[in-house]
Length: 371
Image 1 (cartoon, one colour):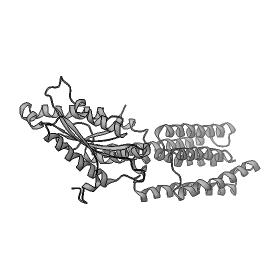
Image 2 (cartoon, one colour; image 1 turned 45 degrees about the vertical axis):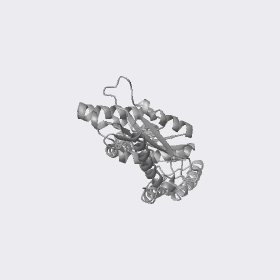
Image 3 (cartoon, one colour; image 1 turned 135 degrees about the horizontal axis):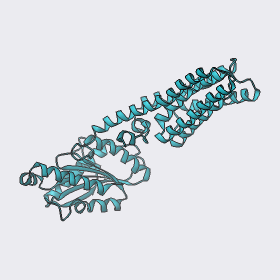
Image 4 (spheres, helix red, strand yellow; image 1 turned 90 degrees about the vertical axis):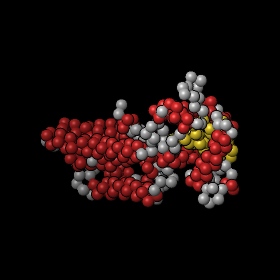
């Protein structure tokens, strides 16, 4: 499968504005836009009530008034920025689709009903932005089935010319399907290009920029699970000697091999990044005991007896205990943890290498410049 399509389950809102540290002005703009669209939906419903194409039965009119009025509640929540969490976003998507369909079927004019189905384009954009591809697929299946049913009803009752119904239906289906799909693909293209600048070309691991972005996610995960964070700096021992003896091609193979094993060792608990020639940085989460054990076993995890050439590593790790009152990502603490881990790594290297040196981060040891 195309890697672009494999990334579809991730909604754009999570990628760009899902975190609390995302651009606040953009998030407010998104909330305002959805609130305005929701308000406009209620306004359109009220206008159809006084038009000749709206519902003519009392029950249908009562339902239309009730729905348009109740819809003002989620509208207000969007304007106030109070719609939060996956469940709330999914419920609003269901409300938008079912509400749109229930209002449209009250119309006495099939032409107006087909025209009103264009509103599914707006809800499709919502599903594209806030929910994953499975929910978008559900929306497309529901809306297309509903629109085709309207068209069949209009044809069987003879209220509109068959050719005209088919033409209207074709245009509406194209808009309902292809506008959200095009938006989704555009998002994925942007994501692919952005991620390309965060990956090391040689190893396929994160680079320094990618590490900082991922560190924020790891920090949020550690806070949600109330566990500690550790930053480890890993350097291949005597790498210059490997390059001099075997050449740069073999040296690159050693770097790739070491990077792969580091990522395998922390997989599920953190990420590995190549942040220098033969230097890697790891960010991990876990209990104090779990982190100490994982760091202590790192030197053995990256070396196998059959390796040729054999290349050991020196590791320095700085641990940061879980702090309940520090919810947002602390850039200063993370920067100082890297400096601290780097110092510990050089201590391990000066002691002969092939070892791990771990210590908790003591913020009082550093001045404002991080030294």
